[in-house]
Length: 70
Image (cartoon, rainbow, N blue to C red; front, top):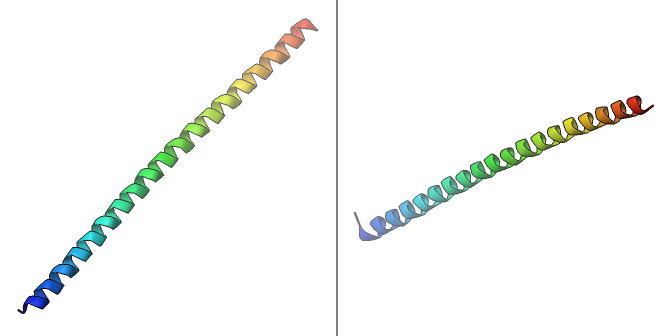
């Protein structure tokens, strides 16, 4: 094997390894972002649900207080 062939092979291998590592890193980042966005979506949904329940309870109390007053 000639030296230039060996050098080219090494360069190609390094380039390929670097590309694979970069892809794995970006996939891992995307996975983290997806996990975070799912977490925030779940949190916001939970907060909205609690807010609606509180509003319903407040409304019921308001109606009850008006009925007892009137």
